[in-house]
Every structure is written in structure tokens, then in C-alpha cells.
Amino acid sequence: MNLFRYKRFDIRQEFAAMKVGTDSDLLGTLAAGGSEILDVGTGTGVLSLMLAQRFPDARITAIEIDGNAVLDARFNFEKSEFGERISLHHVSFQDFVAQHSANHLFDSVVCNPPYFDKSLECPDLGRLRARHSSSLPFDVLASGAYRLLKDGGVFSVCIPPEVLTAFKETCFFAGFSLMDEYQIKSVPGKEAKRYVLVHRKGLPEEMHTYTFCMRNEDRTRSDWYRQLMKDFLLG
Image 1 (cartoon, rainbow, N blue to C red):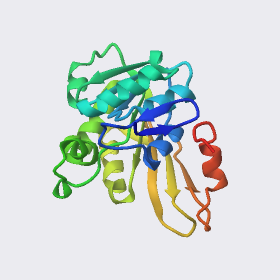
Image 2 (cartoon, helix red, strand yellow; image 1 turned 180 degrees about the vertical axis):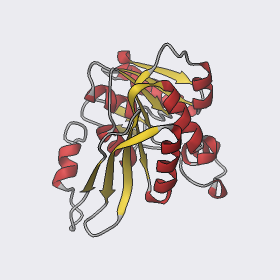
Image 3 (cartoon, helix red, strand yellow; image 1 turned 90 degrees about the vertical axis):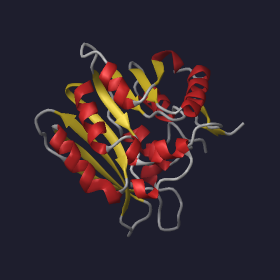
């Protein structure tokens, strides 16, 4: 069995197209939380489990369009101590938004969005859905997240630099204000490799920008990254 082990839960990743990686670790530790959290495109369920561990009073709704990923997520939730607080739905984000009751809004929406251009699409449908923005365009994601959030709710994503400007503009036009921007470098002296963005539904607040490195120049884990992941990673 293909397992990735964290301190308090394991992730089976037998069937899901996208495996555990740095993006999920960064978003799982830096995303804003709340009492009611929506995990869009849960994949193996790793984000939902990390958020359930970080926010012990939260109830989490996890949605996933790919049936193979749902198999892994369901298994991982059922085997975890946090599973009772996570509900899993096999549904596209578009259908979830269309069917969802306006009487049940979320405090937080979290998504590791697909961001590759359609021209680069691969033949595997599961990986296509997980990796390419044609399956969930930025404007659909941002407008849907805005609709599902309470006033003052937060929308957290992890994206690469090549789509940073486009994604920020899309969120602005959807009605969000950017609260926190985490610029994550792989090593000192390099440009940021990933950005974790935390948006707020409602009037703008002061925006904070942070810059961190995951590794030192000798490629060992930085003190910041070790501290960030201390409750999750083994060793």
C-alpha cells in the first residue's frame, strides 16, 4: 500500500492522481480556519485532515470530482481520529455551488487549485482534473468561493508564481480583499516557488506580506519549515 505517514494520521494514495506534496503541506499549515471549513478538491484528503488537526472544533466539508481520489479520501478519513468531523462528497465544485443552500455558509474555503494551461493537458483524466485549470477556471472558483462564504469569511489557496497576477486579479473582481500573502522560496537567493494567499470576503483590511525559505543553502530544512511542520512531519 502506498502510504505517506504524518504524526497523527496516514495518507493512502493508491488511486488519487495527485500525491502528497509540498503544496498541500504549505496550504495545510498556513490556510485560515474557522468553525465550518470547505476543502475544494480534497484529493487524498490530506488538507482536510491537516485542518481538522489544527482546528479541533471545526467541521470540514470535503468535495472531490474524481472517483478514484474519493476512494483514497474516504479510506483516510475513516482510519483517522478526525474522521467524524469530516464529511466527504463526490461532486464537482460547480455542482456543489449550484446545489448548496444559502442558509449554510462557510467560515473558510481552502483549495489547492488546478493551474496548468489547457494547452499542456495530459491524457490521464484524473491528473487533468487535478492539474489543469480547464476543469475549474479561476473565475468559477473565486466567484463560487465568494458565494459560499459568510461575510468576513476567508479563502486560502496555494499557487505558483506564473499565475499569481491572474489569480489575484480574479479574486479582486470577485469581491475579495487580500489579507495575507506568503511568498515561499525553496532556498535563499531564489525567487518564490509558491504563494499561499489568504483572501477575505468583504471590505479590505491591511495586507501583510511574508517571505520564507523551506531550505537552507545546504538544502537542509530551514528552522522556519521545521517549526511550521513540527506537528505533522515525522523525523
